[in-house]
Image 1 (cartoon, rainbow, N blue to C red):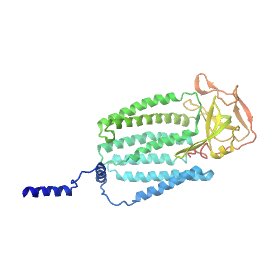
Image 2: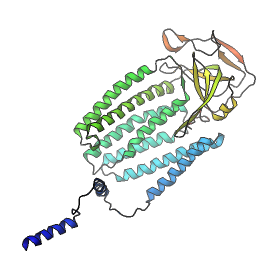
Image 3: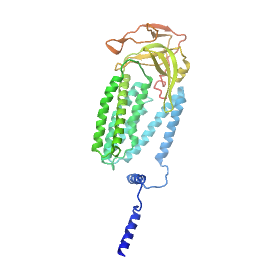
Image 4: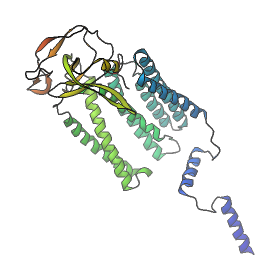
Length: 390
């Protein structure tokens, strides 16, 4: 009788504690999430933050779609509206993440991470392209350092650090925005631009993999528990390292270039449209340049005006690191634009310095008489006065 009573008491306690049946992995994860957040399972109701994200995110998406098809002043309006809404979204997310933290350093990391990212993105409609590209790129390193420090703190003290995977996107977002500014550039061929990218990418990849493996050994990181997960993270680190080095070379070569450009009048050999969907739409004019054909991005309305066989005036820059590139910055204000001629075909070709293959030496210019005079356009290759993203 005593044994039967004792067994009945054990079964009652087991049923009351939820141990009468084995829990699945999904149930276990849900329980851990509820324990971490201090909430219990109940009927879902949209919170204030959810409504905020739906309204602001939906408005940002609609403004981006409108920006793709808008022209002139409407493009400027939706351009500024889009980045303003992105700043509002980041500000709301930053406040939400800041309030979750209990450790002083966690609060500082949240405020600095979202503040730095938000400022860099909000200044995009206000600054010229070179300043924008440099600011976005320089904001990557401190953002990544804050994110890594906060991640280490969360692993060691998860009760006081509360960051999610969304915060890891912010440095990547800055990197992609900085690289988008490089889309308006057309680098000349035969300059061995791949050499610094490969060397720097290998060095940075080795350092990133070493740091990742050291952290995996010294910290209880669940996502790096198995060998396959570590190999996958190492591959992502290698890809990110090469992407970062390529962006660094391109941004510094472009943003620090203080030399005056050389105007070139070249012949249009083809027209094409690149991108669309999830990537920026580029309207390209193919021109005969540098012993080959190069694609030059131009605004949509200018792309519609030009036909194959017409002339296009581009600006040729030597590049701060010696890697020459050309860019369309508007048509000349008079019909006496300068044109470079090549002995064989009459196509534009800069003469290179034998002492430095990337430095542009003198070139033979002659006036090129156009059939009509076109006024200087205030639009750059993508945006009036700025860089057009879509």
